[in-house]
Image (cartoon, rainbow, N blue to C red; front, side):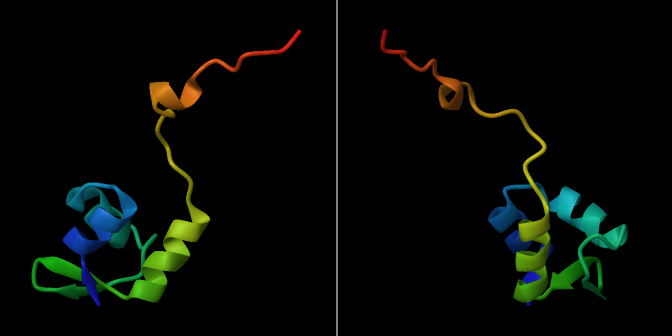
Length: 68
């Protein structure tokens, strides 16, 4: 079982974002006090279904040289 902090590190999100996803039931989790506990298989399922919602890094969009 992973905490929201562990899950956030693996998904490259904030802890608050993971908690929000758990609250919206987009990530299935068990509430434990103030935190959520997430099974690793559930985290893998969620990661496989989602794609990054951010822009690609600038260096990832480097121009490609065309041969003429």
